[in-house]
Amino acid sequence: MENDLSAQYLLALLKQLVKQTFYSDGADLSEDVKARIFGDSKMAQEKVSDFIGSCMQLLGRAARGNWNQGKMEAELHKIKDLPSDQKKVFLHIWKQEGSKIHKELVAKTIWNNTLDETAWRIDIQSTSKHVSDINEPTAIIRLKLNTDSHQSGGSEIVHCEMNSEGLASIVKELDSIHETINRVSS
Image (cartoon, rainbow, N blue to C red):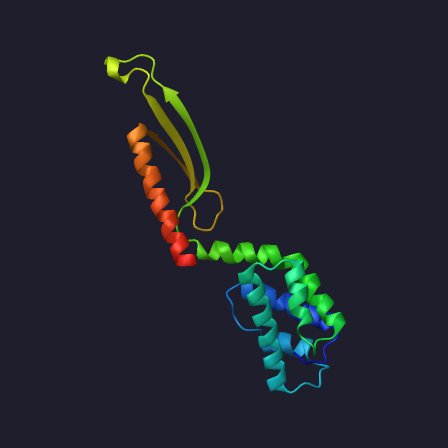
């Protein structure tokens, strides 16, 4: 990541990269912005492109991995040809933007409804037309679903009521899903 940018120009570059890569349409850095940031630089055009690519790659890895400050610092420490003042700029940007970038990436990958809230209770029936239904426990479950794919607040509430057998069936299915996820992720 060898370069001759001042910390101030690196900060400007990283802010533009974050804005365009994570918060915008992902378009490349405009030639005008490159000219302003790298105007005083003696770097060849190819080196400028390589440096921008390296910066984007580092920020992308950090965002996908949801790095904390310590992880970012450890990764920057591995880059020997990056001056310490520039490492501080990367850390500064990551401290300001890291969690917001990760949230943005997660929001862009969700296209279905999401479960926001779960509540439940157990009711025991005390009166009924049929004597066999008395003292039968019933689970009442309330699910709040976020129905907006970009997390801006649309929601739907679903209520379910089930007896012991229905609940056992749901638990069995959830256990099966959990086992499958564990098997796939290991």
